[in-house]
Image (tube, rainbow, N blue to C red; front, side, top):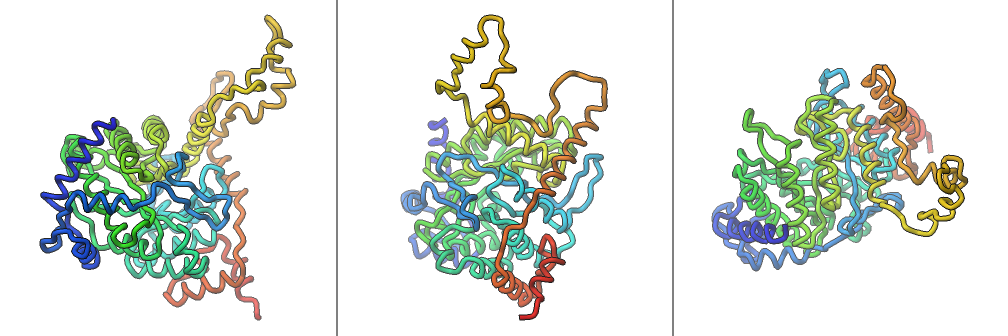
Length: 481
């Protein structure tokens, strides 16, 4: 695998040096000029040694700091972290009916993620709310996440004004000196394949670098449409785009944390649309992980990805294939680990909850097999003797709730004649309701809430709509001094 990664690396350097990459942002072009790269219009030609010198300044690991330090995330340390689905505009119900996602759905997912033990991060674009104007959606989603969760913050990317509002909110929450010293928020930027990065993505990249906050530079090249149909060509093209983006971060602020991202996959040759539940997707993510390790950078990959249009066997099969591949590849942050359907077009509450079950199983596998004296249980085996049983042993009583994974959703036990799909959906609904009922809004001081509201109101944004329980918060905020 490493030999193939080196071949792809050399091909990427050739692309960047001879074909170049187009940057749609004057500040980015100025940075490249100031750092000695050849410019022709808005096309940059990257000399390999200079490029890699910049990339070498990126840290190999960093800590993303949560409001509650219990949820701090180590990225690049070898631990696999999970993040939710991202960007879906629709909700797909178990019945197959499709409806537009709304802000209420977004806040429901925030509550589920805060309550779940499997996420140390919250936010992003769990769904894209159709009832929010596009120019207001990003800061409102960030504000909703800040007030609903004390986990690490995954932010949507947006236009310059929305990004500026978001950082004003972050300054109010943490202070500018804290932000400059600690990674507090992370976002992803996508390249515009082939070989371009657009103005919005570059503005996000440069603004995050200004505040010393990390971005995930993530090409999503589709073999056969936005990239060559051969996977090696697609990976070489995508790697060139990723390297250019990472180098730009370091030109803007040397040492700023950054993640190498890979969402590459193939196009469906029947329709031309994206395919994320394919074996080619698995191969691309595995190779992306190897590329990131070669550059000594933290890696972001995909999760429980599927092309299925509903909550069905295809969704489960493809989802487990892609999620387990990312986990086995040592992905530092798996985005889209729960809920995604139909090539990122849909989000499913049912699949989200079932994906949490899959993550739980992977966490159990991750723990492995202990071989301590107590684990070997030689005295227990001796006590049970030949032909004995272990169910009533004290050793079993002491460990039965923690040693073995106990599913919340999946069915075990004796086979019976019943509507198994209905039983599965009922178990999922019970677990979803349990998570929502167990949600507790983390404390934010009245002073912090007032400052956040002032920033939102000054930017003509509805602060109360961002809250999980606006009635209670209104009572607190509107008390006379």
